[in-house]
Image (cartoon, rainbow, N blue to C red; front, side):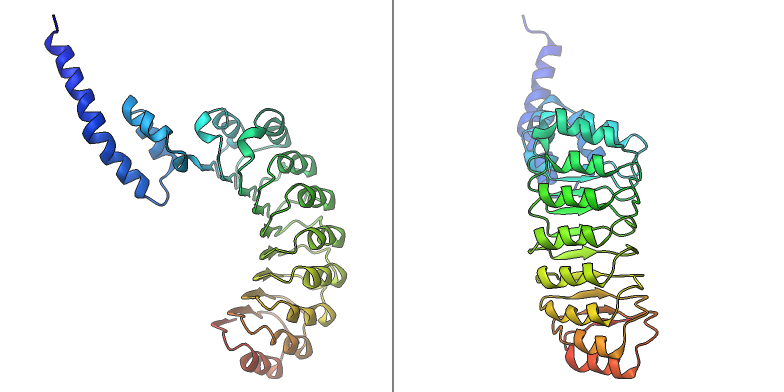
Amino acid sequence: MVNGHDVLRRENDLTWRKEIVPRVFQIVSTRISLPQRDLITLLLTSPWLNQALVSCSSLWQVLDFHEESNAGDRLIRALKLPRYHHVRHINLEFGRIEDEHLHLLKNKRSESLQDLETLNLNVCQKISDKGIQAVTSVCPNLKSFSIYWNVRVTDLGIKKLSQNCRHLVNLNLSGCQSITDVGLNSIADNYPELEVLNLTRCTKLTDDGLQQILLKCSKLQSLNLYALSRFTDEAYKKIALLPNLKFLDLCGAQNLSDQGLSCIAECKNLTDLNLTWCVRVTDVGVEAIAQGCSSLEFLR
């Protein structure tokens, strides 16, 4: 004999399956980005909703542990779960993660990173070349890599990155002050399709390294050379070789003269240019920019 409690439970289950789950799923699937915590909370709401959400792989393409004190451990645990086996974006910015975590990813979770496209290790200052080598060896489809403000990463790490991840189009090395022209040569030789490059405060770089980038990475659309005072007009003139360049930050380019700037004026698609603290630039150079860069929207 069926009691009233069983009947009520079955009715509730039916309501969840036929009404509530489809409604929630429709709302969730139309959101561009739903916070992980919200998704996890929904998983605990109902077994029917759990099943529906877990089966939708597009909801589990992002892992965001930025500013987490145990980011490395949480990342390892998350990648054990089948729903994260096709993760595409991992954000660990300001998170606590070390080389050993990245070695664990290589040795035990490599299958989960085959589709990874974006990896953010910004200000993860305990990561060294060893960690970079480990994690990039299992991310063959990586397109965007960011590790700003890390003095432990050297040319060796950049070499391993460029060997392991051949499809990068976005690279942020801002504040990686141990990188030299050797690292830039690795980038230039391996990334002809590179579109975005940030070299802010990579203070060991010289004209030789930058010129290799400008000669071989002709598809660059964004180039950040903020606070790099060692470059000269010899390198700056070759920025004219970048026909697709839209964003250029030359703040603090103390050796840039009107002659170099006049060559940069050949970048017809430039929309955003920063010339703050370019002390040798005069009205002559600015006038050349005004005449040559007809698409310019922002000039600082």
